[in-house]
Length: 480
Image 1 (cartoon, one colour):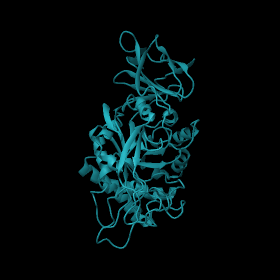
Image 2: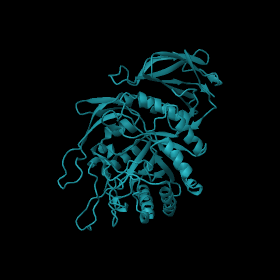
Image 3: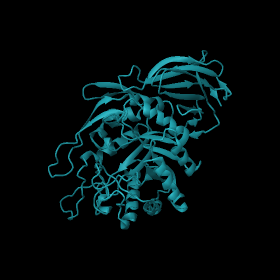
Image 4: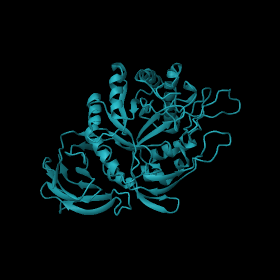
C-alpha cells in the first residue's frame, strides 16, 4: 500500500483552464459542427454524429482556445504576378487562410475556423490566444509558408518584421471590434528553434533564431499598444521542447523578456523524470506564468496523456494545458477524424479538400474528461506528493479533487488529508465521489463512469486502483 499526502500550502498555483487548438481540424467543415463544439466546449452530455452512428459524450468544458492566424492566400483576377509557393508535400487542410493579401484585406477568409472560434465563445470559453505558425507567404524570404530552403534559415524577411507585427495587431483589433472575441494573448512563433521547417514540409512553419524572435517581439508590443491593445499580453516562444524553451528564454535580452507576459511551451520532449520541466520553471521564475500550449500523442488509450498531465502540473506549474488536435487520425485525436487529403487540385495545387468526418471516439477523450470536468478555472493546484496524482482545491465550494493515474497492476493507495483542518466528505456517510476510465487501447469497460463511493475514515481514505486506469475523486466539506 502506498500513500499520497496532500499539502494545501505547498506548490499551489492558480488554474486558468484546459483547452484546444483550432487548426487544422476546425479549418475543415468540422468547424461548422455544433455537436463537436458542444462536446469540446460544453459541459452537458451531448450527442455527436459519427460516420456510422451517434454517440453520447460528456462535454469536456474546455475554456482555453488557441486560434491559428493563417499564412496562405491564393491569386485572384487582377492580382500581380507574385504567387505563393506551395510545398510539394502539403495538403489543403493544412493551409490556413490569411486575411491580409499585401494589398488588401479579406475578412471572409478562414470561415470554418472562425465559426468554431465563435461557437466556443458562445459555449463559455473565455481565454483566447491567437498564434502564428508562419508569417503570410509574401512576407517570407522564399514565398513559401512551409519554411525556408534549409531548416536552419529564418524565413521571415527582415524588412517585414514590422509588417508582421502590424498584421498580428490588426487582426487582434479586428477580432475585438467585429467578431466579439477578445484575444487575451498573441503568440508570433511556433516551435521557432526546431530544425524542421523547410520548403518541403507538410505543413506551415517558420524558423526564427533567438535574435530574430527579439526583433519581432519589440515591434509587436509597439503595434499592439498603438491599436489600444495594451491589455493583450505577448506569449513566447511556443518551443517544441522544454530544453529549447529554457535556452530561448535565457537568450532573449532582459528588456525583451519584460515584454513577454507568459511563456508558452509544447510538450513533445521525452521528460519522464521532469528535469526539463523543472529547469524551465526555474529559468522563468515563480512569477512569470507558463502555459503548456500544445500537447498531443499517438496513443489512443490516454494513459500517456494522463501521465504527462501529472508531470506537467507537478514540475512545470502551467496555468493552462492545451491539446493540439482534438479530432485526428491514427490515435492522435481525442476523436478519430477522417480527412480528404487526396482529391487532386484542378490547377496543380495542394491536393485534398476541406471535407471531413468523425469516425470514432478514443478512450483518451474520456481520460481527459476526468480532468477537465473536475478541475475548473479558478481552482488551485496543490501538491499531492507524487507525479501520478493531481490535486486541486475549489475555495468557493470547499471541495478537493484528486486524480490518480495507475499505469501498472492493481494497487491500493491511502490518501492522507490530515494537513487540512477539516475533511468531512459528502453527507453523513463521509462519502468520496469516484469516476473511473479504463485507459486501454482495447474497448474500455469504463468510460468516465461513476464508480462506487469511497469513505473517509477521519481524514484519510483508501482507494484500490485497477490496472491502467485514471480515477477522479471528489471530497466535499474540506477546509485547508
